[in-house]
Amino acid sequence: MISIDVMPLGPAGTYSANYRVTSADGHVVSGAWPFHLTTAGTGHPGPPAAAASGNPGGIPVWPFLAAAAVLAVSGVWWALRRRPKMR
Image 1: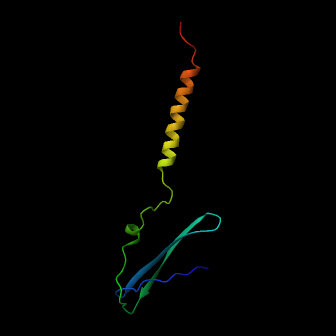
Image 2: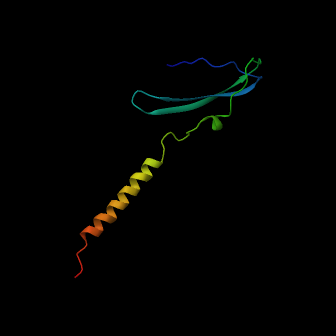
Image 3: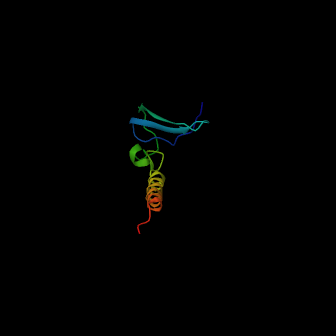
């Protein structure tokens, strides 16, 4: 079980508590649960969840694209080197 303190909440209304954690074996677990605040707090609400996360997917795509490009270039180079020489 994990816990974390939260900042003071703002006006009364419906809020969503979002979480994303990495377990000891490396799996990412995320989720959310809504709750309704009936007594206004002294804080201000944060940005919406979609705007707050800078990397929603978690894993960048560019390393896979770079690896695919290197494999493609290597394959073309290898095919050209194995071609019999014309006389």
